[in-house]
Figure 1 (cartoon, one colour):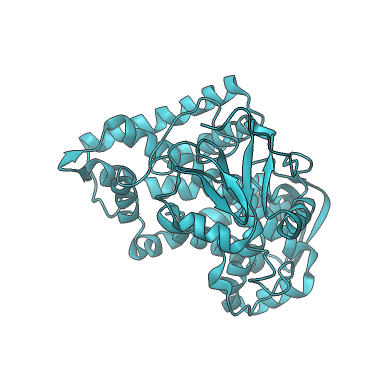
Figure 2 (cartoon, helix red, strand yellow):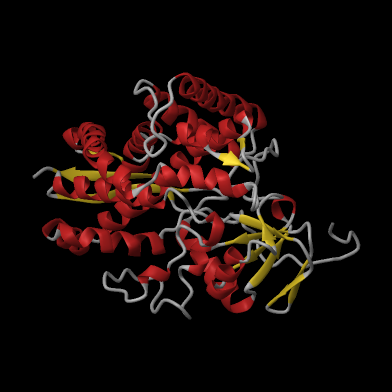
Length: 398
């Protein structure tokens, strides 16, 4: 536990702004002035802001554990769900089961149906010539992606989108009653899914719930409630970041007409562009760990019980690793080094699915417009996310 007599000066205020540009300016200042920073906000936590230290912490899961606090601010109910909130070896069977249902073959097989969903969701905005790309498309298309990956009843997709959006807003505001109500809706979806797969199992490589039910830890089945928790976490994780990343990418393209035109003319460049967009617009600033022993990082001592955030968004703009880090560069040589999906045991298992989803979103947005422009005010995400959660675009049809 933290020494109650130990006084640490507050180095920054994470709630000072939600404007993405201003947050990145804060990180730029901290990387130079105070790369291991502390704040009293959200109960007090440390923030690592430089690439080498963040990468090292993400890879050192024996010293930096996830089972105490995995996100700042945390779910106000303090629940622990696998695999994000578990440490190895408890973490391993859940991750193994989810990875089994995320094979390249499975993901490739989903592309045609996901592309059809993307076109259907985009069409109303394109027909009227304008819309909020993050809220209207970015919030609904990922619900269809999650529905297809988990093999949910298609009727659940709109409900999932609405429920997850309300849960996210309440979580950011630490509104416990709404968090509880929306979370219970998603738990019920997960419970019904588990019950159905017990009665009607599917191939483990095609169905996450069936894969979790078939998994064994020390020869024993995984606990039912933990399986439910893992699926409930999958419902949320697949719905939180995508609207932010889609909103950020579309806004960037909507203000850079030259890049937009080039990608429209040369769609083969889109996958490479996506990696640079992921570097620039990593959507989290609050993923956390807790050290298991006193740890000194760049001269500052962090004690057990004190949360440490790994600000991947800051690491991805560290000028000691990425030249001209605030600029978009399509041909960046070391783009594979970005940390948008983390590193180590807790690296995002859904990264391949996320890449497919984003590629489809960008390809269809470009293919079905002659041009689009970002207009009006934009809303930034609140802690622990970072990026654009609301942005209007004006479309010109082909």
